[in-house]
Image (cartoon, rainbow, N blue to C red; front, side, top):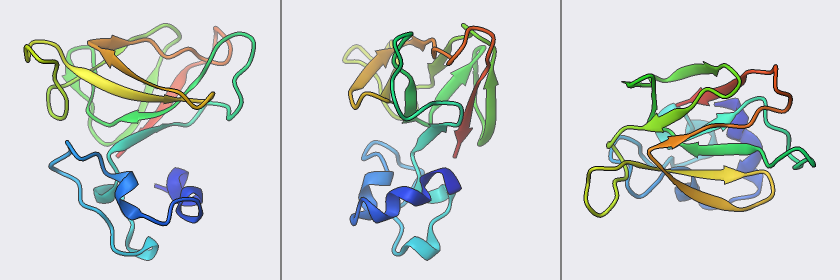
Length: 134
């Protein structure tokens, strides 16, 4: 996933790309060997690096997305404005195991655990959200 290659220079440790709860992904040995199998997080392709006055943008998050009740497969997920996504129970669940949780990283540097559903805020209300899902 080319969206993540710039971060190789920032993070010397390869384990930051794999969530400890993700049993399907493996830590890569060297940047040259990096593939989707070494990444637990989606990248928000349309996100801007800086937050604007109209809201804070999601930059990345847990890959175990669910859209319209179906687990999202690796590839490009395109969401219409205001369209929510949820999470499968593959990686994180709440204490009672009935609700799923996904972790989202935002452009202003904060991280949130979102329960059940998340509605990404597009840059403009008529713009879609595109997520590159490993």
